[in-house]
Length: 409
Image (tube, rainbow, N blue to C red; front, side, top):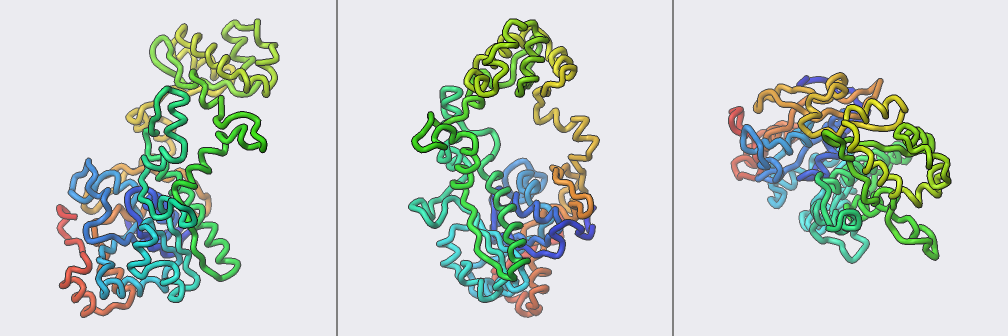
């Protein structure tokens, strides 16, 4: 797969990726999968996730590799004037710059949108960081856990389960990463019409508040309010995988037909005609009551029996799969969701596949996640720096070029 020519919908675009950890790298990896030439601009120490275990080689951790394929690494000290000048030579040829560095730090480096716009009026400059610059939280540091607490997510767990809790995935980073990807592609469409680039802000806090409150604004959607916030169906105490006689299953009667078919199947014909079952508005007010019936009934049969029954009556149901189970899932196996890739330094690795499918312009896995500074010299040559300038930067320690020893990142 390495060396494939990009054919995706973003082929021909160049992206300067000045992000680290998960939010930005997740967005820019998808851009790379979709054909963009993504240059990962790293400090001399590199992205912090490089050394999050497990890894075969220091600097090439699993988390890092899962969000940094299809990128080339430029390791550079942007606080050094000569190195910064070298970086600026990349800007005129770039289509997109995505940055997760806080705006004040970028301004101090002379790399704000206002600084770069004169060099490239068509540049899409996306700032993806914790809080909007237009409010009193501007400039605060933020990571996934902080945003999960601030946006209301942790408190919703308290309403449902009695204690605040974080999601067991880095939800805020990845949701904001997808919003970043969406924002950049929309800005590219707008540039295609106007010829003008622009600054795009994608703050984590506001993104997650918006994401959460599509359903949870509820009664506060009206002025004056018609009830409290919080979507009762999602907060119902029995909305969870249901215990069976030998495990757990996910069962979700949702429509009127689903509920009447389910209740008929378990012998609860006495309530199938009740208005609180058949009327959607009344059912939504009584959903906790219905979920309690499910929770009380599922222990009477095995998981296989319930899954067979729900398949027969065409009601949504799935087994509760663990992360290890998914590696052998027949559906994911059939569609090739876990592609194997021969990485030049890390050997054979399993990758998280790209779920988006384009029939005419497919995603591709062309290069594995780069070693720190693996492409520094090549990228600066493309920016028309001569060998003397590059060697001076190397000698001064202002850029890093990965050595060719595959045992060293």
